[in-house]
Image (cartoon, rainbow, N blue to C red):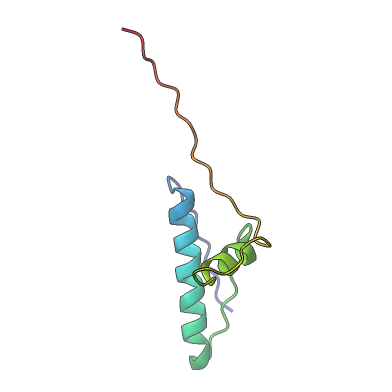
Length: 77
């Protein structure tokens, strides 16, 4: 078995979600050629479920939210 660890920094939640969805697509595409790829990440199943939803599908059972962090700005003149 071969193993790869990825450490990603300076990535937004949206980019992280897209990266995990893309890796899952690679996993699905390569399955027919033999490799069994396992992906471990926090909330991976929820992210993939969210990524596979169709327009108009009920997403009430998917508990994943992205919040922008408010930056403190100095507005003194």
